[in-house]
Image 1 (cartoon, rainbow, N blue to C red):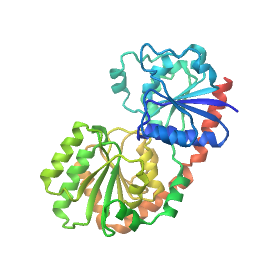
Image 2 (cartoon, rainbow, N blue to C red):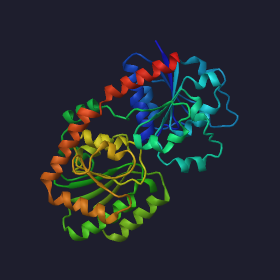
Image 3 (cartoon, one colour):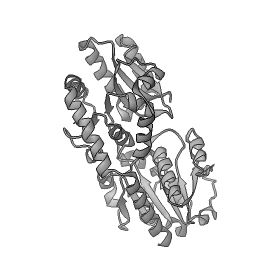
Image 4 (spheres, one colour):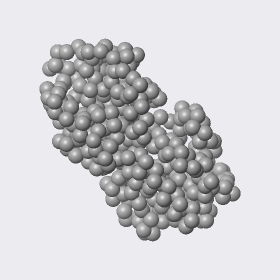
Length: 366
């Protein structure tokens, strides 16, 4: 049985670690022995342990960290996110050739400025560099000096979502989450931070609520609780607006499917993304989607077919698109159906696992 190591930058409830969690489950299912390394603990550690994916904590980001010999225990190593370079630089050249480095970050310049010791030569020293979207690969293409770049779309396990939908009833889940059955929910899901555009979502919500006199129309942001300054500013803006009972912040939660399930419109208002899992999950739930036209998102949904695309930072555009779907329920239903059909036909979890299985085999034998 081949043994692989998954290296993550944290074990938080975030898109990149959740991708690695899904990947680990899929690889274990087809016969791999999987261990997971993280420099810090977090809520996902229990989830990894529950799936027998053997997580352990090792602070590889320290300059004093010594990993010599440990990487020899594995046939292949998958390093997740650009910050994993800290792990890669501490491995020997032979170990580097066992590594597939998965990048989700489209904001390349931000990370190269943040990490002064991030050496571009690392991209050519690992066996594979994997991107989830063509748009993100294009950002790094000048570093493809070894011809080792590859695209594998990041996909969640739709079967898990289907099982959840079959076992639950919207009315009951709404009540559990503090909503009335007649509430209409416009939902955005993701860590509340500048990059995700929740302030602009809040501003659009306020303008809509000024026009639409309906107490059952609710705007919900799931992903609070980190204590970032932007969240404090958003909470203050909501309080000053007088719509505190209709614009709601929910702390990040492991029960995220509950919120997709009870949504009527899904919004992803980010400035920067690669190939966001949240869009794919919204598609699997058959939701009408409004999203920003950035990086890999147009590779997931076509404007006017599986969703509606807007420019990042365009508050008025977001307001108009939400108003359009509020007034055109049949069009919203059509977009949701198209999104569901597309994920069934084009973004399949089993296909992603097959691609990684092939990549791991090539890496281990290379």
